[in-house]
Length: 111
Length: 113
View 1 (tube, chains in turn brown, orange):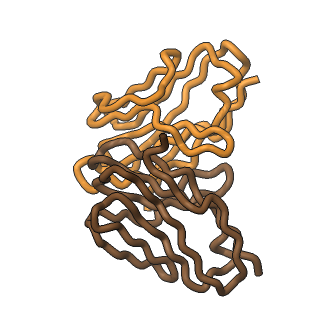
View 2 (cartoon, rainbow over the protein chains, first blue to last red):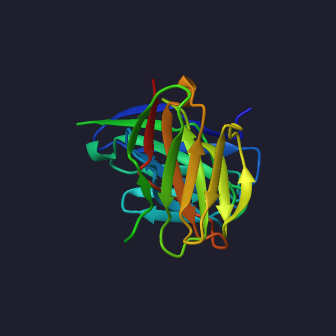
């Protein structure tokens, strides 16, 4: 059983539309991190959320950590073709602990 | 800003050979992690070091070993390579006592033929 699950696995939308990616777990995490990964490259850290209910914004990207620190979401407003990529959520049980990944969501934004 | 450095970026080995992957963490980061990512899969945790001591161990084969040196760089040693070891190997680093957010290197693509 996957400790962390992302949904959907794949999302295809038109430029200008909004999208939301979910990252869910039955376990509590001390932090959740969102990454974006291009093929053959290392994951690039987008944001870390640590406080239940926390909301962080990065330009058109909004990240939320659930009140119980078991789930998180990534919302992209007015998506652009440059947002196309693989988005990964990853949780850590404590600072300095290994990351458990959620399976990834592949986003395709068509012009 | 300085990032995690990994070398080599690409490595081709034959079955039963050995390989050594190197990782140089972000300056002042005290924790290093190794992950293995197969095609279409998530990165899977192998092993981590905090202040030069092994701090956690994941699904790392007995054929693999790793260590962190006094300058905080880390090496992953892989012996008796198998075809199934072909993957991307990532090193990540963090400042352990903080939020633990991990910064990944560009990876080493290992191909075993």
